[in-house]
Length: 128
Image (spheres, rainbow, N blue to C red):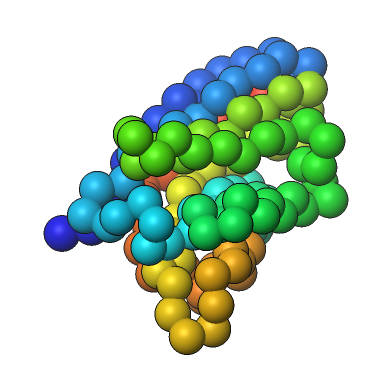
């Protein structure tokens, strides 16, 4: 059974930092790319970052580029999202998701529909 467990959310002041973790089980590290998504109250789910385990390529949405960093640890089969310079508009529930590589290639995708497995969200609240 594939499971993704996101953690690390919490309350932080604007300008602060937080690191989210996503532990993946049931999938081999080399078989998927990881994506981070967020959903603010009343809004749709947005892909903010993803990373391919095959070539290390990454993607960042413009709203987080330069402030967030995605990384992973193959030994722990865990992905991370380091968030710095947090803003109140970063307040959202954050989700990690896995896209299993298929014949389309070994890249990552920030699109909701491209993900095969989802973890439960972790809430990040940034106070002003």
